[in-house]
Length: 255
View 1 (cartoon, rainbow, N blue to C red):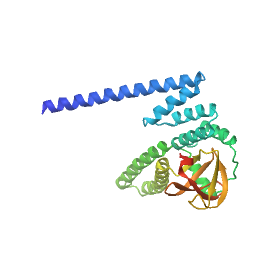
View 2: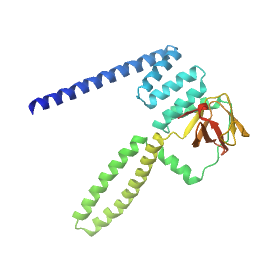
View 3: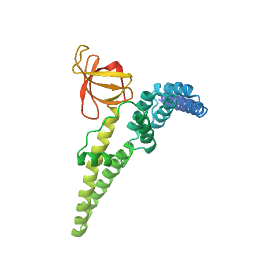
View 4: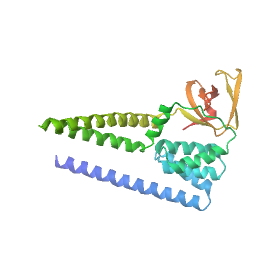
């Protein structure tokens, strides 16, 4: 028994050392990429950032820096793609939104966005009050507070105190439900790949998933589209003005 415990502890220590070593190596690579970027060697920094991200180490900062490097090389579709990926981790970040806006201003397509209903707009603005992890933390905090309020309610003998706790509990319960919905939606959105960036200079959008079908309209590289459906090598897409059609999957890269 003692031998097994020692082996288990040794294994745990070795894993911790391995993880620390891996983290140190990743940090060294990030610093190397940052230095290459600051020195103006943008292609080198892109290669290093892409290598880090290929190792399943993702963060909004890495995607943001990679987007900046691509922007410096005038690769707008890749810059926009990485800014959009950064936003999935950190929605509402001012720096990311600003650089994304600058990059979008340089692409060919300038498409009007369909107006949103007021409550949809309010809900989106509410979701930006906290980062994705912040809503999960708020959910845990509110649940703990509800537990404390419930315990205090049942232990209290004062009618007035119970009334105050009950009213407070209803408010906290509502906040808990809203936080839960936002946390779930944010998590789901971060895992979904239902939006993409066009990577073909000029792309005809078809009426059906068939090369011989009618061209409905034309879009250009750098444009963000929403993926509605997939059929073989084809994706049904929708652009921000509501127009829909089919394009080959090879022309898109998912966010």
